[in-house]
Image 1 (tube, rainbow, N blue to C red):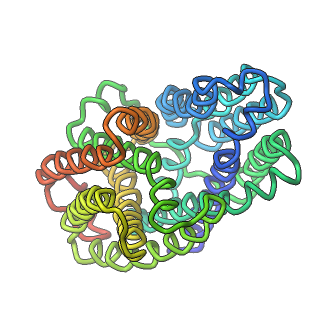
Image 2: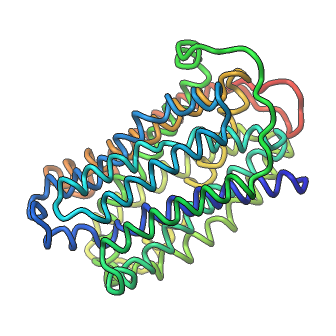
Image 3: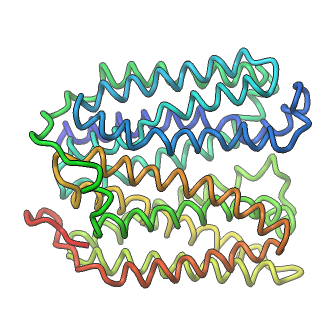
Length: 397
């Protein structure tokens, strides 16, 4: 990477990390805190407060992506961060569940993921793009692990209102990073691409389906995993970060060398398919795990490690592929559609996972994951092989 590419990648990954840390900090403690608020005894309202963020995110990704194609990436990112900060401050001052829900909806309306990933694609050469996207994935994973450790401490020290206030401050700090640290954005390509052209692109449709399945499986898994870790490892909820953090770090160490080597050798398709196969195997392994009464600790920990290896490879590869396959003037729109399907996958994973656990038992979540992974493998098998890194011609998927 050149110094400019490193600066753009690290600073934009930092923006993701600041924003996602602010979002993740409330997850471990909100359902407990809600009981102390008017309306907090309603599980529906608590679920809505947590889930409406993903819903408004999914509605905002395409408009924000299109706007970033027309008016510039940085400008749209700043607007999105201001909305996120406003929603955080609304929730910080809320004294009932209705205002928390409104604040969370406004937070989600600042849907900047497409604009940020498009700016990363604009600021990096094709040969370095997957590496840059992997930095973003790493920043999100580390933010999640950090939130598990920090959230109970912050809640005890400053309360839920204080945590929401911190999320707003983090968003404002991210604006400072955008304006003063992120390198100047390159000029946007001329011309316009209609959203119909983007949505109808078969190559992009495969990737959009893939990200929907990947995040549906992720969210559905974590409806079950906390209870499974308590059951099989006798690990209290407040100590789960002690497992997640080393597993996440280990997964990044294991995924980067084969991912970068596969691009250098022109074997990206094979690596992509291998990661989907690994995801499928993990789902079967988790289904087997839940059928046992007891098990050695290495099985749940090993499966969790393999899941994050597969997840991180796919999470780093797909947005890079979208940016390569999208028309140059429609990169933001294409990533907007992609991130919309990502948000919908998170929303559907939580909803469907909860329904399956309620009516069919925890193991059914992993049967669903295996079926969806197998379907994704069949669809992805039709990919054409991708060129070596740095090859000029466009890749076809």
